[in-house]
Length: 231
Image (tube, rainbow, N blue to C red):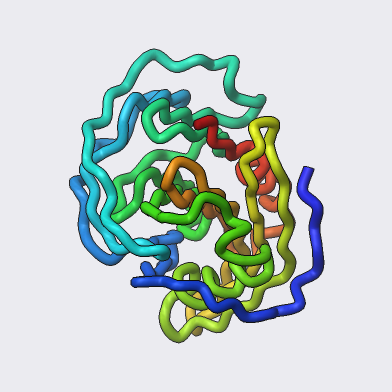
């Protein structure tokens, strides 16, 4: 369970070598990676990550490997959700049934609704020398930096609404944030959860249009709450 706090909008002095810019479909990308074909299964278990090279929020270059599909385990998913489990990078999460996997340059995994363009979930993994989020800053500080430098496209007006934190049974620390971004063409309400383990900085972001937020918020919260790393 997250321990939430209302956002006081403090700033943080966090060393970042480069910042990827998230676009309308939660894009965090500065260079391209090899594209992949959408999977035709609802439940996915990843045995390894794809070849990828991109700038990271905390700097560095991602490692390369190949993706292999193995039979899924339906019991992993809640009713109304599909499960993703990556056994190489050590993470898992749920996403709403009906969303389709798409290939987006610079992203480790993206699933989206084919009708509503702002409804999606995207996962990215960046190398880091930090051992814990506590070394980077408080939930509010990390939220401010991510929204300002990575989670809002240039020119967008962004506001962090609240932050939270939790620890899993293995002691991994997670920060979660809720925020809105506005441009002249759309307004998006989003949730992001981040954690650090084994030299990797994980970010999982999901959201919807502000118009559909009341209908989607509970399902999107399940996606955020389901995210876990296990290495």
